[in-house]
Length: 202
Image 1 (cartoon, rainbow, N blue to C red):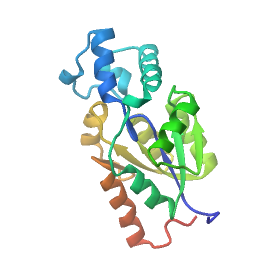
Image 2: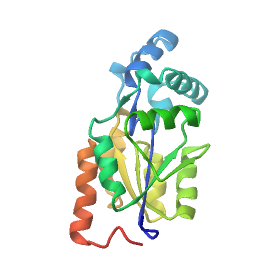
Image 3: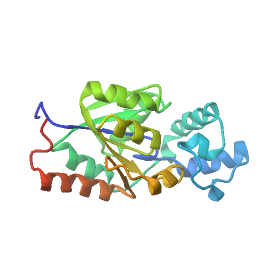
Image 4: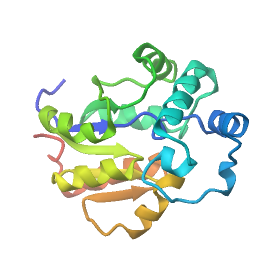
């Protein structure tokens, strides 16, 4: 393994792990909310769903208690993660409320491995820790993370979700690339390597 490889930080919830089916059911049964009628009106899930951060955290804890209901955001993720791992140091950088043993087991069951796992207590800490770790690229669904990454002069790949679609549509920052799927993420890094074959080396 090359020791001086460029690093990529990748989010978990709603970037790799798709618990939408559980969330739809949970919100309907517990909050009388039908998210099918929601549109992008907040930077993150809690704002979008119209619930408090405490309710949002409780929902995600329960979601991970039912990890068998969580699907991959994209069936191509394991292959693309493996592809990226050949040239990049890969960090899982997550603020999930799930116990570490829950999501690491789920990732392994889906054939996904990272070089390191970094857990932060708030999403806005991702760039703080990432700078210390030398992470240059971030893949996330939270627009506030994308903005903080770009403000620090790093590259953000924003995975489009209903709660960030307005931001993604307005974005003009060249350091933020909005994508619809993981195949676009793979193509993004292929384009970088075509332009600069040594881009994965620090």
